Amino acid sequence: MKGCFPIHKFRELTTPFYFYNTTLLHETLQTVKHEIEKYPGFCMHYAVKANANPKILSMIAAYDFGADCVSGGEIKAALSAGFPAEKIVFAGVGKADWEINLALDAEIFCFNVESAAELKVIQELAAAKGKTASVALRINPEVKVNTHHYITTGLKENKFGINLDKLDGVLDMLPNLPNIKLIGIHFHIGSQITDPESFVGLCIRANEIQKNLLARKIFIEHLNMGGGLGIDYSHPNKQPIPDFKNYFEIFDKHLHTNADQPVHFELGRAIVAQCGSLITKVLYVKEGSCKNFVIVDAGMTDLIRPALYNAYHKIENITSDLPVEKYDVVGPICESSDCFGKETDLNQTQRGDLIALRSAGAYGEIMASRYNCRRLPKSYYSDELI
Ligand code: LLP
Image 1 (tube, rainbow, N blue to C red):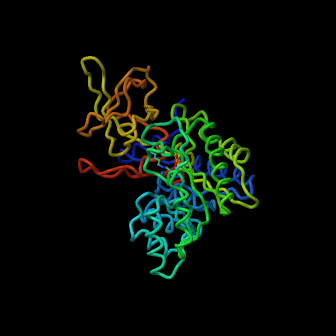
Image 2: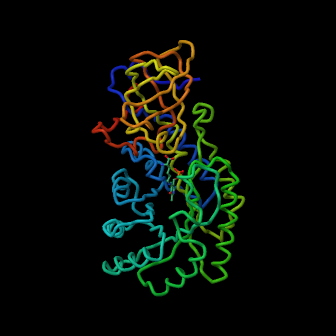
Image 3: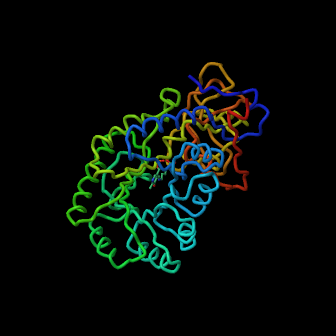
C-alpha cells in the first residue's frame, strides 16, 4: 500500500520538497500525551535535533512538551517555537561558552553534563553571572544496543557521557562547585531501537546506579532516560504511530523510582519520522548495461541517511500504477554514495513521475546541506495544501 498524497497539488510545486502530514503528527502527539499522562511524573522533552522545522516545533510545543536541545541554535529555535525555558534541557559533549551563557541567561531547566571538564566551565560561567546552574549528569550506562554502529551511544568507547568508573570522581567534585546544583541523572543508549529489551537493560542499569548513589546519600530529583524508540521504516503505513504504550509501560514496570521522582524522556524520531516524506521528481530513466537507474532531482543533500548510514527509506512511485520493475534510485550529486535504493521495486517509471521517500520526518530536512551549491529543500504541510 502506498501513502496517500495530494498529487494534483504536488504537480504545482517545485521539487524536491518535504511534505508533512500534520494530521498524522497531531495523532502521534495525542497518543504520546495520552500514554505518558497515565504515569504521574513522566514527562517528555522532544529531541529538537530530529526536526527543527519551525511549524513542526510549534505544533509539538502546543502539546506542552519540553525540548531537548544540543546547541545554542536549538535553544533559540525551541524558545521561538514557544517551548518555555523552564522545560528546556541542554545536552551535548561540546557546549561552547556562548551556548552555556545563552542557556544561563535564558534560565533553562537543566544542563545535561557530559564530563568533569564541562562541569568546571559551567561552574565558572555561572559564578561570573552570579547564577546557579541546575545540572543532570549524563552517565554512560554501558548498555549494548542492537542498532547502527554510528547511532549507538551507550558504550564505553563512545564519546558520550561520564563513564561509570569516572562517576565517583565527578561526584566528589560537586561540593567544591557552589554554582552547580545536581538535580538529575541522564542516560541515552542510542537511536532507532526496536528491541524493547534494550530499554529493560537500561532500567536495570539505572536502578543499580541509583542504588549506589543512595548509598552515598546522594538523592537525585529526576531521572532522564533519553530517547531512542525506533520506527518501522519498512512498513510506514502498517503502524504509523509507534507503540508508545509499550514503551512507557517498560519504564513504569522496570525502573525503580523514589517517591515523587519524575522520569523524563527525550524522544525525537518516534514522534516525527512517519509524518514526513521527501517528494522528488524523476529526471531520467537511464538504461544501464546490467540494471536500470531512476535518476531523481533529490540527492543526498536533501536526505543523507541512506548515504551516511546505509539507512533504508521506503521508495514509492506515487504517480504510476504500472507493473513493478527493479531500479536503482539515485540522485544527481557527484558521489557514488548518492543512492537512495538499490534493486528497488517501483511501478514502471518514466520522466516526470513523482517519487516519495517515506519516513523522512526525522533527521531528514534538518540534516540537509548545500553541497554542490544546491538549494535547501522547501517544506509543505497537509493542512496548508488542501
Ligand atoms: N537524547 C539524546 C541525548 C540523543 O543523543 C538523541 C539522539 C535523542 C535524545 C533522540 O533520539 P531519538 O529518539 O530520535 O532516537 N541522525 C541519526 C540519529 C542520531 C541520533 C542522535 N541522538 C539518524 O538519522 O538516524
